[in-house]
Structures are given as C-alpha cells and as structure tokens.
Image (cartoon, rainbow, N blue to C red; front, side, top):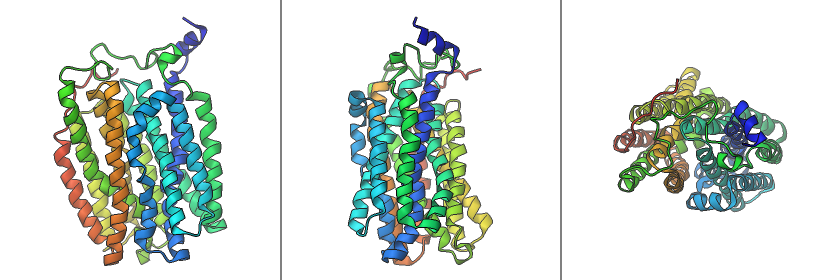
Length: 420
C-alpha cells in the first residue's frame, strides 16, 4: 500500500474532489451556454429584428451536436474523461468569445452549434467520469455535478443581465468566455486528471461510503437476464425522457421572453430564470440523494407532477399575470429541471453493467438532446403564429402527461439496504 493510498484512506475520498471540479466546470459551461444565453434573446430580437422562432432557434441549435453523444463512450475510453471535458471547455469559451463579433444570423447559428458541441463533450465526460468513480452513491454524485449547471444559472443570470444592461450583449459574451476558462480549468487540472479510483489505487467509495454486502445494484458485473432487459431499460427510459424533455427545452429557452411578454411583469424575466435555477440547484442534490434510496417509479411520477404544475402555472400566467404565480411556476418548473437527469440515470446505471451503461448513456443523451433541440424552435414558431405561448403550453401539458406511461414500464432493480 502506497503512502498516497494511506493518506487517501484517512482523508476525503478523491471522488468528491472530482465532483467538485465537475460542479465548477458545469457551472460555467452550462450556466453561460444556456441559462445566461436566454437573456440574449430579447436584445438580439431588438437589434436585428429577427423573429422569435429565429432567436429561439439560437437556443435550440445548442443541442444540435446531439448525434456526437454516440461517440462519448469510445472517446472517454480512448482519451480519458479529463481531456474530453477540457477540450469541451476550451471550445465553449472560444465560441462564446466570437459570439460578440457577429453580425450574421448564420454565423451566430454556427457559433451556437460550437458552444453546444463543447457542452456535449463536457456533459458526456462528466457523466461517465462520475460513473467510474461512484457505484453505490452514483445518484448523489451525479446530482452534485448537475447541480453545478443550475448553480451557474443562479449566479450567472443576474451577473449576465447586469453586464448586458451595463456594457451591452457583445462585451458580455467576451467577459463570459474569459470566466469560463478561469473558473473551469484550474480545478480540472488539480482534481480530475486521474481517470478512476483504480488508477489511484483505491476502491470506489471505500472510505466514508462503504458498499453494503447486499448491494449488487452498482456492481459492474452483468446481471442475469441483462442482455434481454437492455433494450427495454434503454428504450422505455428514452420514451419517457423524450416526452418530458419537450417541456424542459421549450420552457427553459422561452421563460424569460414569456415573462417579459406580460406587460405587468416586464423586466422580471431574469428573476424568473434565476428562481428556476435556484430551485433546480437544490432539487438536483435532493433528487440525487432520493434516487439512491427511493423506488424509481414514484420518484419519476413526482418529477413529472412538478413539471406539469410548472407548465400549468406558466399557462395561467398568460391569463392572470402576477409575481406570486410567476415565482410558483418558475420554482415548480425548476425543481423538475434540477431533478430530471438524477431521476432517470441512476436507475439505468443500476440496471446495467458499467460498459453497457456507457453505451446506453450515449444513445439516451442523443434522444434527450434531440428533444431539447426541437422544442424551443417549435415553441417559438407557435408563438410567431399565435402571438401567444398558450398553444405551445397546452401541447406540452399533453406530452408531459403521456410521459408517465413509458415511465411505468421502465425496468428497475431491487433497492439495496439503505446506508446507515
């Protein structure tokens, strides 16, 4: 046993340091690339006179790199999670920097695609790296990583709005690009360069989070009947995710514009997005903790119920705008957003062996991003046709209710003993 291993056994498990690095990285890449960028929709519309469908498409194009998620598993296996994530950070920062120099809608779409590609590289590396470091508490670890994404929205949305109001949207993109690099790269270099606990000479969660003898859910060994259940586990999860993610993508991209479009709430769009980000931050950790201890189906039904409440709240807001209703809808929606991945992925990880989960994640993430890509464009187009978000919100209500059907068919594994 090496001296480093002895120190590891007496201190904090290194996997949590990896999670901290991934938290900060997601905070900047996702926080700037999605949450902050929703605030650019209004100034872009005002400066260039583009339609709401076009500016919403700038949010949608962020997900167009979805097919490349199929390369996640071989890329991480060949280059390592650290290199994939670091390259994604650099690409996202570079594209964000160039964003402020654009005059053409076409070039803006290209740069948004590159920002999305950087986000996909980051997200795939984060999920697979967390899966390599954690078994029993994968749900909590993954949720902590994703919480960084929403913490980025909480912190960066008001900062971005202040910058846009103070120096303009072009200069804001330059400042954000520099911040992405300065906040993300140092912790990645310090903590995330080691690819797995095996490389460090320790067992996953071998310190403060012992694995119970009866817990085989996180084992990397294939379970009986896994070859038969693989397709069912994957495609029922994809179906439920796809139907629910339509609302996730459409509302998140248009939330600020929807709120600001109500005369009584003009100027409160950033506050609504911040409320969503804050509730998503706490929900990510909470749902991640629950996913390691609670049965899958009631947890997912809770998620879908909160998403439905958020949709109905925004629908009511178009008829009776009020601050109380706005915050209620934003918070309910934010809780569902924060717990979305943490509700679905841990069950998939428990159901499949590690190699099969790595492959399944790429396919799942492809469909997930496809929904996030198409939904904002469709919602923006419906708005341009009706001059109201009501038709889109009615459709999203239906798709969210339908998501419960495949969710009930997702196979699950017996829960392990709860850690004491």
